[in-house]
Length: 397
Image 1 (cartoon, rainbow, N blue to C red):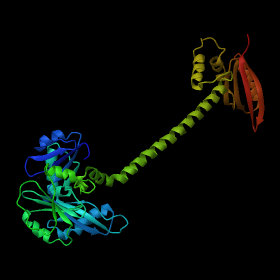
Image 2: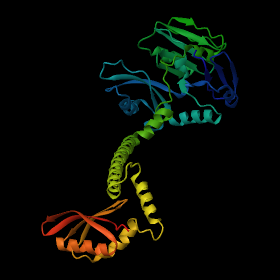
Image 3: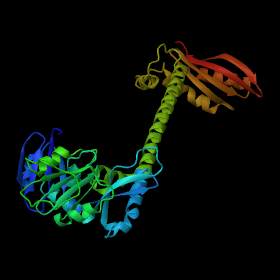
Image 4: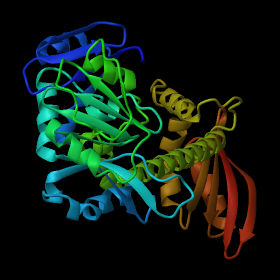
């Protein structure tokens, strides 16, 4: 027996028999039993009188197709509408075959709902529900029979068996086409002897009660577990999420794509920022040729301009003073186009375009009248105009 397991056999009365894998056992109501459940797996044996064990052959081995096909393959052998029944699959044919011979447990959905609801209301969440007949100890080639006062459980195979009224046992055994080697019989009380049966019989000891016998014979890989499909929490969630799987994949893909685009945009913006800083550095050096070290061109430009703006009034030996005196002359010069202005500590340089040399000489003379020394650093003809560099300084007093 596995550690940390609680075994419970549901009965039709308020009192149920239970035991744990570490040797604790007892009888009580479900609410009382729930106190011993914490931290343990719960295996519940349900009455085989409520479960029909059948088998059928389906021309497929895929589980989802088996689940769809089994109800209709068994429909003619069932008295109830298949829509009202729950089908739990057991063993199937070994791999390598095209068809699947599968064992099936059939139980009313209303009964499944009643079992689960009754347990959960008491605070017990079952990990598995198993027909009690499939937990009887089994010996190869033999059948196992459990006699109780009102019911007989007969296990006739790994996942085959039935529950029936004791009176019907001779009839059931009399219709066997392939009889077993023998019949192992367990009884829980002093019952009347079995009617004559044409099979070798041996007694199966049951000193500790039925539940102990079931726990001894229970093997998870040989039982048919009823909590399948909509009654299996994992499978139920899978069915809920399956229609949304494609949408989920698309959503994740969209998120990844958005993240990728954000990374690309960030790299693009970083490249633009680097380019802008480079251009700002060029502009700063161009405007202030005396600059030696450029760390933050924007801040340094603001500092230089603020310094110029805050120089004392009357001090005309600065950029603002030169511009104040030169601006009226430059503004009235005929055909003058100012291309660039560079500030230096001892003056400023103007890159300009003018109609001809005569007008350039006149501009120089007009600047001298405002106490500015204008020196033509270069002049060259460019089409019908003259391109020149004019340096302006204060006239030394």
